[in-house]
Image 1: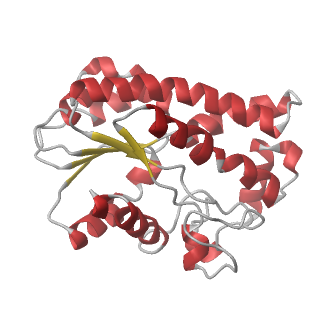
Image 2: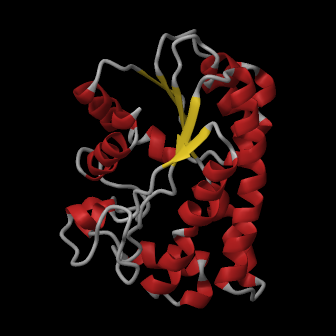
Length: 252
């Protein structure tokens, strides 16, 4: 079913954008805030093809339809922001935890899986447009303490953590440190920025700084949507994308 959705969604006309966005709901739900931040700071334009709920595996499975290659190979494309990995984790972690494996072991399994997918996906993008930079980051600290539903989700993902923020966040930050950072060191056309702690910093969590989150706490509830995993539109996403701009795009 999602293959059909991806095929339809990607059937877009050619564009003249400088920044292409592919990936999941952080790109999809945050599209307006991202474009506003970019337009506030520059004359660069954005083509956003992110699809909520999509996984890295699904994007890789769909490269044969030709749309991704068309998007990234347009002559004005300078940067491809890839926001993926979270939904892969959401699908893979529960089954692992129910087998009685440790949070560390389950997270390492996810990282290994997504790293393999990213290597293939990034290689495809690079071959389609060798001059474009690929960039991404490992999200930010989430907000599983916000409501009952969030707590249920957290226990489903990491049952052994028993809703302990330190236990869950220690695993979650590996999407940055064990996934994006090694790939950026290995592949000369891939970049990353560490935005962990951005929402905590804006929410005045003591000891937090951008790139240095307080692992023992969630992101502030006021900056997290009720689904626990997305920054608020018009506030939390603006914080994330402003930091993204300042730490990455402004330095290009």
